[in-house]
Image (tube, rainbow, N blue to C red; front, side, top):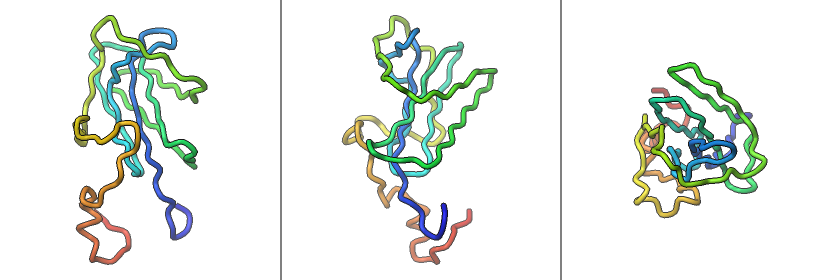
Length: 144
């Protein structure tokens, strides 16, 4: 943040796909983040055996992100590479069961409760309990 005003957050969504080889990925998404206008997005998944996964970060068309930090953590040695996508990847139905499964560190939304999965969810004030709890208090930084 530069100055006293912060730019509105851009909705980000992260999606994880399992590689089937070449530029082909499983049509069954491993996991995805929430898609809301907030500062952070995250995904978590586990795999019992190794594998190749593509993590995609998307934002609405014509949006601009000044800075983006991507962190990857693994409990085993792993190679991480970042490549800007120049072309879409091909989705295909896998011939074997997936090697990865999603995890949640903060909770998930049942896909049946989403109005649409192709647009960001609006930020709801009733979900932002810290802001609601401190709404009548001074508007400076809230320390936890």
